[in-house]
Amino acid sequence: MKNLVIHIGLPRTGTTFLQKNVFPNIENVHFLHRGVPSNIRNIVSYKVLEGKVNLVSDELYTINNFSSTNEVGPFVVADRIYKIFPDAKIILVIREKEDWKRSLYNQYLKSKPSYISFEEWESDILFDFDFKKYEIYLKKFFKEVLVLHYEDMKKEQKRFIKDLCNFIGCKVPEHTTGVINKSLSKRQLKFMRRVKNLEVPNCLKKFLAELLRHIFDII
Image (cartoon, rainbow, N blue to C red; front, side):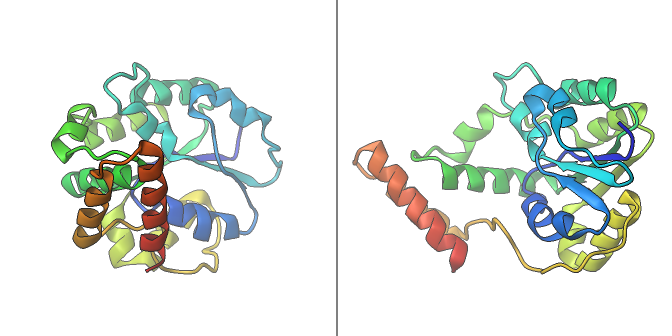
């Protein structure tokens, strides 16, 4: 498939912001959100438009494969993408590693009914994942790979989006700024931890956690 751009992640690098505020607003680009990592061929089933760039964005091409129990890692997924779509252009956004890990952990606590420490959570995740090694691996196969940095998005959002659009081959769209899917503050995180340590049924903890998550997202 020609004219295909695949944004493969990483999660917690402004992905939701791009998926909601930027990609859908680009003229002459057909935004195919999302792909299906477990069956990459499913991209073919989307209504691909000839004469337009077709853009797929899904952070699960990477994050779904970090678990130490998952044998299908990001490198295997990259292989599968290349075998089916060798001409695809690849977009990868990375983030300072320790900050990224804390953000992933924060998101984990927001979505789960029970509480575990950062150390417990980290032990089940393959955080020996090497960003540079992954970038080199992608560039070994794909002719066009764009690697951007989350920190640049925060500092110079307009420049970040301009670089992104230049790579896709489109004009910079009008878009709303701001943070989507923001992390919990230390105070909110502490409060969430207390709720999840309550001696109540998991169903109630899950309800309370979801309620807090909603409240935290709007304040």
